[in-house]
Length: 381
View 1 (cartoon, rainbow, N blue to C red):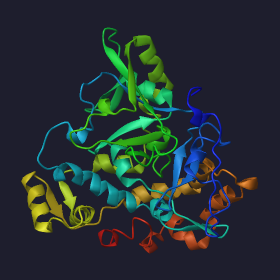
View 2: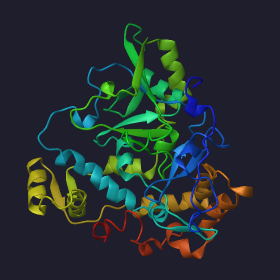
View 3: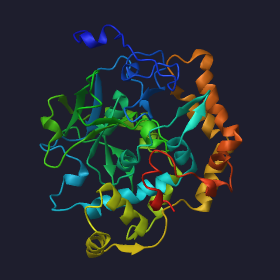
View 4: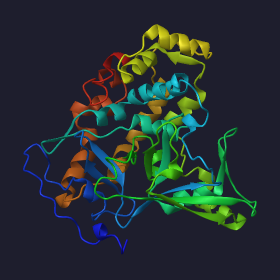
């Protein structure tokens, strides 16, 4: 960092006056230059007009990725087997996107929330969440936390029982990647995106960022990527395992994980077929997509992906126990005098106009005019 002039002096940015924008520092540089706590998620404005909740990048020149072994071709799980088409692989994640968007708090944050006279719409990274719940995507995980990367570098995942075990074979070699962050346009031109703080906790616990990798591309060939090898050490692996409670601290239980584990993965909603068509600009017919999925052994049924009443009841109980206030407490508004905006966000839970998101029995009134829900309204009804 001492050799990078971009990190030495906070840039002076001239932002044209806009009465619709709140009196806060919201540009991308606030991720690196802020007064937030180490574990805060910094509010930044995206080009879409939505607001991202980024893990704090102050004092960080790199994002990190740990692997228990090095692979000559480092590529997302979606592309690890060459296929002419990936519809059947992506369809499960698309079903999860609709499931996630059926959640009251997700729908609220996707819609406009008025704070002190200013409208806020938060980025709900539904596709990115797929990556954190073992769906196939074209994304690779990165983290701003070296300890998180250290855990994944020293603890191996067992997909049979979804557990992580320390690597104890001292003869094996692991790898720690470090990705050089471009403070000017690293989140615009390089396929890098934030997942950060979401309604469901995994991405926040992992201080998550995502790198999009095109088919046929190799993460190792990216000019901003460097790595170091290390010899595994059983004592160090165990230390990282204990640091994150055998991985449970990075993968806490939530209703999304529970619902997804208990679903019948041989069944796909007809609404998900429609979402697939919308995401592909209706380039393929419903009959073609349905035929392809049927040939892969998937059965198409008529239903709207949604959480069960018992799962939502747990959410409403969590709200009563302070989940919303605790979630808001982790957000940092740079330039927020006396925490006025943060307190306004906390008080949303008591505002009757948003009662449909917090009061059990009112979720049937959820709007379809949010950033994402307005794109996929026919998939949600």
